[in-house]
Image (cartoon, rainbow, N blue to C red; front, side, top):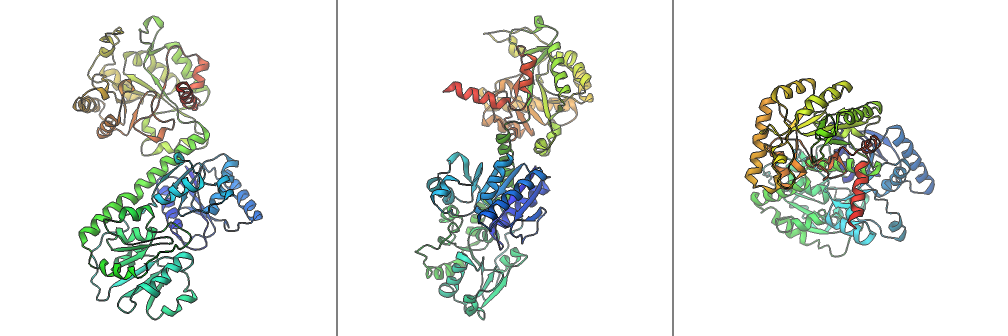
Length: 596
């Protein structure tokens, strides 16, 4: 994907660090990322372009929107992600003009006024970095609850190692954060009121220059300014004081942390108040200092910090590590970006589901899970004439499915369930005729459709399955095969151990036959639940397909991928409708309407 990160800032912020960290991860995953911002102090793998979002007068806004519209079109941007109010406002208009989705991360409380409620500027979907911000947006600004969720500012936890506490004769207390704005006021009050500057070695990390009001502390406090290796400075410290990302980094390094931010003082983080700290992003949720900061309480917290046991520090670290795991957060955002693109353009990769391909209707059987040779040939001819690239799941391995949005991509997938012999005798020659591949899901332990034949309510006639030689010949051509259980059972309706056996034993037999790992699985009858999905994942599959359940967005859940059934009553015109990529949107909307 081509991603635009939008920031507005004049000095380094937690939002910049977060956006730059995301950028590096996305670039390493094969995405193209551009950053537009007033400034950029942190080096990244993304391509930076200067844009003065902080010029908020009308001419400035117009210039910003024009720049962004041109930039989005020039670089084929597919999704934008804004990390500040000023950048989100202009980016939202540019995204609306260009028809691309906007995702926003809300790092702090927002001003509440009438115009803000009318034009929220939060884009198509929003992430709040803590619960208090999300509740504020929903309650005060009317953001719809289904368009916002909490997602922490992810941190590369491998950067912050849990190192032993230092043995400093004079305890080192590091206050990390800006010296301007509300954070500067917090730092000043800590130095003035709360900390014994003679007893402890107090360091200030952050701030370009030392403001005038801080000059009185120059002889008793070490002002380090910005440092390139914050983790090293954290590991040297006995205690970290800060909010937001600073507090998290301190905890991940195994250090006691006093969390105090722009709006709230949490105090020393313990196992008992961690949930409260997370809700307020460790006190960093407001734009103004609130009344009730108990500066003298910090003195007690400081003394208690040096008595904390390593067991409690480790427990706190494990809980924070789970919440802020960058790998998990990047994956969530990647899925979100793709979903928002799909919802915006209202189309996604069509995956067609066939069963049997018969000579004529007399061979079709009673269940109607077939098409004729003529129909199948017509379908393949349509795909060829309309320029579709027929792919398989192997083409989507290793996260390659994200490329389906690339300009000029017109992909489709053909799947067959069960592995009938006619897939070899009737469908295979047509696939070869047009140079197409397909994915065929094999029932491994039956040589005919026993599950349908023994259906007491509507018995089907016998249809034979492909033999080993036919399967191997198709595999050599490039047909991909996947698992479909041993005996075609409804997996959610049998005992867990039976379901496990159906999947695992089938997979083992088929992989031995194929001489390679299979990467996709099809649930018989499209019958599944969360337990069954987990079994497919445990069996080593990377994808699993349903029938007509699952999200309209392919990448939302790779173990419940929706397919489009192709049956004998379809006309060529109907087939053209089903392959356009928007069919599932129309179908789901129709289903929802019928339920009302």
